[in-house]
Length: 251
Image 1: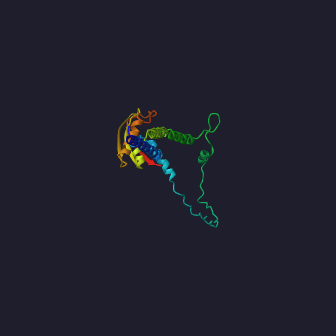
Image 2: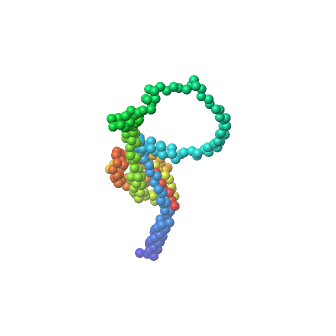
Image 3: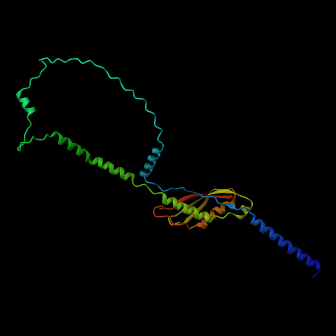
């Protein structure tokens, strides 16, 4: 090998090593993605019972109670001074009580043991009150109201399950290297169907970020996270459409 060929070979080797070193340095200094939370919500939320909705409306009404207004000052009325007029009873207005009337009003009826007989006015009124309190129509109205309200649905299991799904998808999210080098950022809204067993299907982009690489990365994050953990009993009883927003943002 001549000196010229040897020099050319050494030159190519030196420039190749220099180019590889520059590529490694450029990759090490590429911007790191910033961790952003995934905005997660249901497109078709679980239907709560009518009683829970009414109870929620009542709770909101209690929270928005207007400020109480000051009552106007109460003025005490002045006492009226009236002069006492002597009343004279005339002889013509006096009632004469006959002996039979006096005997009926003064002497009560006695039982066989000598005790006065009880009046029927009190027990009759009491029986009417008891009958009114035991009215079956009123009792039926109360039971139907309690049945309509029912126990409120506990949404803590649903919130915990959505948080678990959000964490799993965030773990499988990958920021494209080309987008990181060119400092491309964006938000992608993705819709998919989640079955009660955790199976994911029909993954589609509903709002694009304007970059195909970011849109594809958002869809791949959901597909790679599948199958998702199964929800607790009673949280998802049928396939439900969900929509989430995945954010790609550099630090």
